[in-house]
Length: 183
Image (cartoon, rainbow, N blue to C red):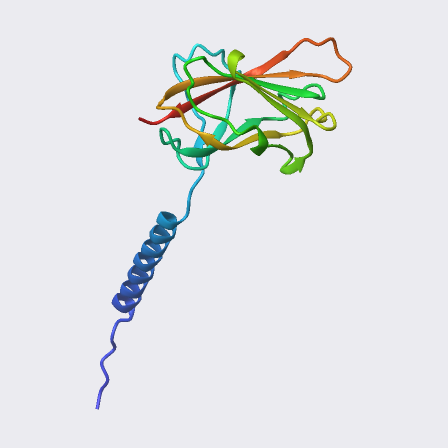
């Protein structure tokens, strides 16, 4: 009695294809259930912002109009040339969203630092954030604005200014976040 050799190649290929397809389906299902922070960065053409002045940001819930969101406003350590005792965020007068000054956080190299005070000056379209201790120079910083009610939709230029400790009270501009809220 002679045995025929059967090729295992088609069986292996079928198993690999099945495993790959199963993995893709499982990953897709997980991705649909998990809220994903939408990174907002890349090439912006005709923004009016000088090259190198655009700051990156991300939104936790995709920037849907009139919905609650969380903004991660990032400042790279290369921009942090001096220690900072005050952050000021200005925004345009047509931004009709809402901030929660009690739900703002400063993260330095991924760790939260204590905040002394947050002032939201609605009349002058600005947020002033005072850390308890000066944020050191040459550190990555994230200003986390939670419980923000997004505006109706559009593009909004948020400018970042800082003041250094013991300095003449002059604000220095670090850059601009160009925040897009989908319509």
